[in-house]
Image 1 (tube, rainbow, N blue to C red):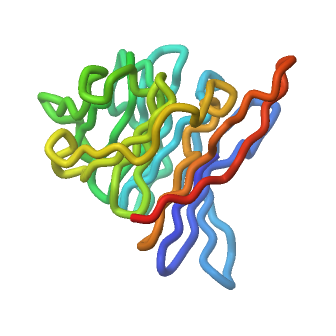
Image 2: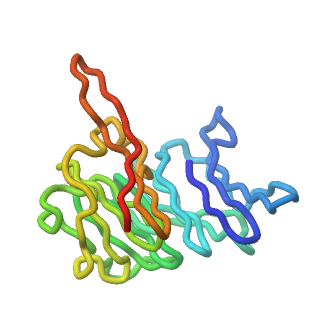
Length: 210
């Protein structure tokens, strides 16, 4: 479902027990054993997952609940982070959690939810509803219902917002997988979709210099 690469270990979320749809957070110490810091047994979880430095977050879409679990020194128990969060896309920086919901982007502090959540972006800011939000390469990237790709600094999204690519990218077939944007020091990479007629589409991997 999601991975987080660290200097000393790799964390990932998997369907550890298919019969119960149990989600398990696994840790692999490079060259060592695979261990299980956290597990979650509810069967109503979506594939939305995100890692901060200290925690992993999982979204239970049926009830609109977001849960977190500490990755180090944990009892292995998930605790509820927030309710009534019917999240479309979930991502995180080292110390903050970001999600898209109802076409907008909201964020909360890592650990305990802020008394007042921070509104990051509204549909009017980017011309249409936000469909996904992803943190990569030190920036937040959002895709929109209008097929555009935007980026901003997570510290102040509205003040740093800029368009990366125009219409024609990331049509609905790709929105089931939110993390279809990646960036390194030199470029931003994303998926574009071309309609070929008769319900047939073709995908292209695109690159835009930073």
